[in-house]
Structure formats: structure tokens, C-alpha cells
Image 1 (cartoon, helix red, strand yellow):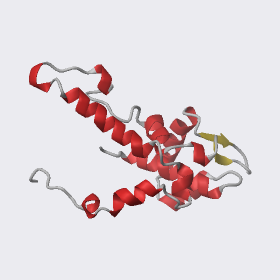
Image 2: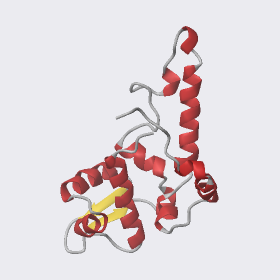
Image 3: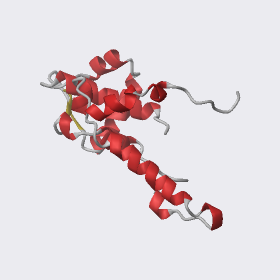
Image 4: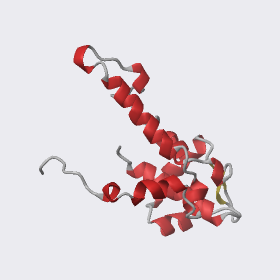
Length: 156
């Protein structure tokens, strides 16, 4: 799975807002804390606002706030807000693709992949990351040394 810069920025923006807990957080504070260029911050926050994950207010007391509690915003919600479905095959949902012949079972592989992506991303909230209180299963998954090992890819 490829995590785009846009998704990475969106999650980091929400984490900064969640950490602030009270009041609004100004764009320049988020930009500085996370080294996110202001124009990218602005466009990413616009997408988060459209998805009802963030609200904003202008003025001296203005800034950004979470639209709902951080515990109610999963990483999956953020990805869907800025990128769309968690797993797609050639731009289609896995349940909408079909293959002939020897490739027929491939659809089930794509469905299983989506199930596993959901199993992690829908169960981790912005609040858990912001407070470094990740679910136990995250520690269990990352405790395996194989989780940290790079796999050989195509030769450069």
C-alpha cells in the first residue's frame, strides 16, 4: 500500500489539532510544527473541511479545530477524505472487478487485502496516535522483526 504525501500531511495536521485539545490551532503553528508548506496545508485542510473532519474560524481567535472528537476519527476516515477508497483495483472497488480463467480467484485476494487494511486503519484513531496510546495489536504487529525488514524489490 502506498501512503501518499497528501495522506501523510492530512494525518499530521489532525494530530497537531488533536494535541492542542482546547481552542483553535492557527495554520502557521501547524505548518511550522509539522514542516508542511503553507499552500499544501491550506489545500489539505480544505479537503478535511469538506469531509467534516475539521472546522475553521477566521479572525484573531480563529484557526482550525476538529469537527468531532479525535477518538471518533480513524486513520481510515482521513485516507478516505483525501484519497477515496482504502483499496481499489484500476480505480474500481475490489467487489466490482472480475477476472476470467486462471485469474478468477484474484478478486478474493484484493478483497482480503482490503479487509486487512481496514483491520488496522479503522481501529486506530487520531486520539490514540496523538496521545501515543496505540492499540495493543499495533505493538504486537510491529514487535515482529519481519515487520521492519525491507523486502527485495526490482533492481534500480
